[in-house]
Image (spheres, rainbow, N blue to C red):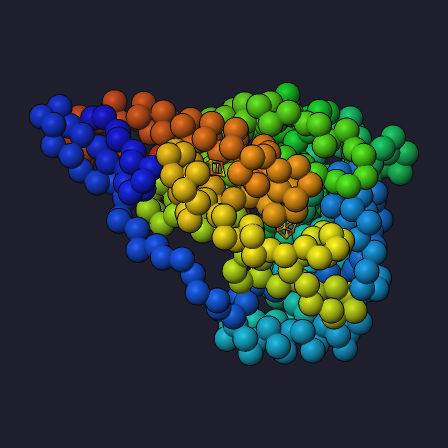
Length: 392
Ligand code: SF4
Ligand code: SF4
């Protein structure tokens, strides 16, 4: 069987040796979203952190507005608003800085917010009591770690005289063992990208984590070596990670999203949800689209939204148009390409979509007919499209 992908209609099809064509994904029902209520709230619980990562978009972008720690009263007001606005179907994200520096407020939010709840944490101060509380209140724990050596984590811990790497490693392993839902977010950069697959293997085999993200660094306003990290190196790393995720059955966020699009048929309108449905709140409760963009005097998101790939004629012939979403508006503001997007995405997105299509093509070549092909594709790719929390 052969695979055909049409980037204009977003159709993924298979053609058999007799020339019969079979569609492998549903036709999209996509239309440009009208303005809608927010369904995703990000609460900056703490504009403070016990680390100083040199690619951190908070520390390195002079985000100072809006207080240090969110008060319980402020959090309660925002959570009430969120519960009403989203009717139990939203997503509430606790983020920082480091939210665990404001644990009493995290507890309060975990107990009172409806819908899906997530915390982004470095896990340095994650005690057994805290992780058990988060688990029992259905909070998804997304923790950051950049590899399996202090050197991989130099951008996070420096010389690591305090032993932060060891502490966090032990905490993650323990949380997984206790039945918490844990995903690891790793930022790839000069110090770890060549060992990305070994790092993924460490996350899975040593820490027991089966959902992971390997992002490239956001640009930071302050000078950081990670600002110069080559996107081609990142693309190659993600290709290697995808092979690992297939082999070891782990969810990799970067390819999981792309596969959901290819097999689900629905194109991605916005890569960053501030374009439609996300709101962020400073510790003092002030609402904003994005704290980073708030540092840009007079910034307006409208121009970026009006040029998103699905409505942008310049993106029409791009193989990645349905999966792209236009990337991060902040990165696009710092270092735009000619289309006004983050200068890195027009290299990365097509490289990954082409790679996934080649992979699907290779699998298709081994199937004798359409039924065998569908069974094979389901078996191989479905487990890679949804985050998992326990090893199968
Ligand atoms: S990768 Fe670039 S050209 Fe392709 S859809 Fe995205 S922004 Fe447009
Ligand atoms: S613009 Fe969106 S993706 Fe970029 S830093 Fe802000 S919230 Fe994150």
